[in-house]
Image 1 (cartoon, rainbow, N blue to C red):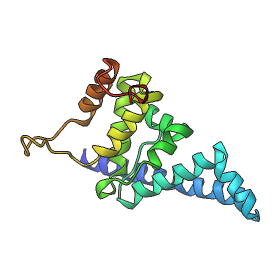
Image 2 (image 1 turned 135 degrees about the horizontal axis):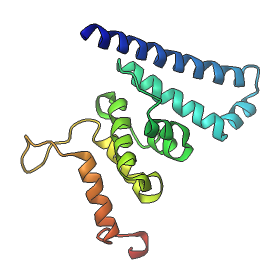
Image 3 (image 1 turned 180 degrees about the vertical axis):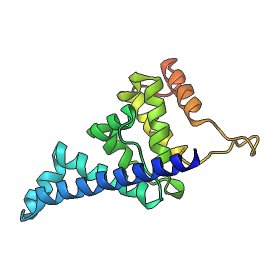
Image 4 (image 1 turned 135 degrees about the vertical axis):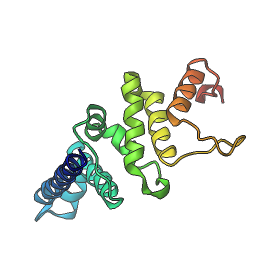
Length: 170
């Protein structure tokens, strides 16, 4: 029923906003009354960087009017993995601020390939999520939209076939 979907969206939005508020409170409680050196130390720690990157990502998603289901297994993995989250949040902006779509694409990739949680595959999953969060048109047939997830799998396949230059080959 349409009313049920609206209610579910409301519940999800409320939970999402609560998650953001709770994260803000956690950070504030850790930093209240601290010196600049202590704040910097917190930001560099695993806990601090995870909390700060999480907060920035969730606020970016909320600023677009979106919500994110943080209980999704792959999304939860991203939000709790310092390396992946830092890579995700420091690799550039997203056209039209579509962070939710970027996270969803990333989550689909690591769901399809659990090995995409490290190394080159992780980097390709992050790059694909960030790049294809906004539709990318084919250069040969402009009306065709490139499937980012399929493209990521192609890049992985080419890398495994050693069709990319590696640092050793340079």
